[in-house]
Image (cartoon, rainbow, N blue to C red; front, side, top):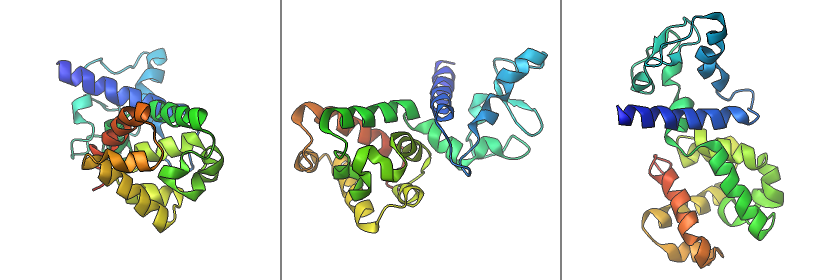
Length: 201
C-alpha cells in the first residue's frame, strides 16, 4: 500500500510539473491525465483506488496499471512512452529549479559545460530552462534528448561522457568542468537520477 501511494505521488508530482510548463505541439498532452479531477464537478469522478481516468473511454484504472506494459485505456494512453519516462524521472519543476540555480550562481553560459555551445544565454538556443527540463523528463535516452533539442553530435558525445563518468564514480570529470566541490554532491545526485532511469541505455 505504501509503495502504491509513493508511486502515485511520484507520478502525480512528475505529471503536475510537466503540465505546468508550455508544451511543444507534439509533446504528450498531460492535461488528459487529469480528466478525473475535472469530472468531479459533474459527479462522475473515479474512485480514489482507481484515480486514473482514461481519456478516450472514461475507464478508471489503478495507478499500478500505468506503464505496466499492457494497455488498459482503449487508446493505450496509459502506456505512452513519454508519460512513462516522465513518471520515473525527477519532477520537471525540480529539474528546472536545479538548472536555474546553477545559472543564477555561475552565469548564463555555465551549462555550456554540460550541454555544449547551444546552451549559452541561459539555455535560450535550446528553448530555455523549461524546455530542457521537459526534454530531460520525457526523453527515454540521451539519444532522444539530443534529437529533441537538436544537439550537435559532438555536444551529445560530451554529455554522454559526463554521464558515464558519473555512472563510474569519476568525480574528476565534473571537477574538470569547473563544478565546485560544494556543488559536486548535488550535481552528481541530479545526474545519477537520470542515469538510474535508463538515460544512457
